[in-house]
Image (cartoon, rainbow, N blue to C red; front, top):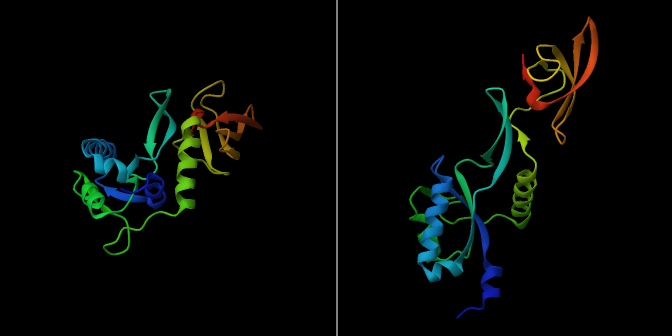
Length: 185
């Protein structure tokens, strides 16, 4: 019998291609298969669908939803054996592993760390669904400056705010607004 520390050291993260929109269903099916097989539970330790929280406006209301980082892909931490490969490969919705030729290629530790960091970071603070650029024309759709138009002077993605030069009473006035308070012209 192998030592669990040795097993963990040999485990790597792999990317699995799934049918688009079926990521959560594949994750659930795979986790069910792992629970049914004691051998699989020692070979496959984590199944992850990287997501982020996204803020958007619908019908005039701000809504927070989840969006997948990599639509059509899930990450699996596993010890690559013929049995574990077959278990993953035969899961409904899985179209294959990502890798060169017939051999799946594991992600590097740096890639995994970055993906996990981004997932954690973006769970706490929702990112806006729409991105803006300096010099772009916008119209204010929410707040005291509703229906005023202007040009974006500054974009602060971290705070989710824009500085817009709006024409108010014939003068260019800088106004700080949140992403969800404006729409593109």
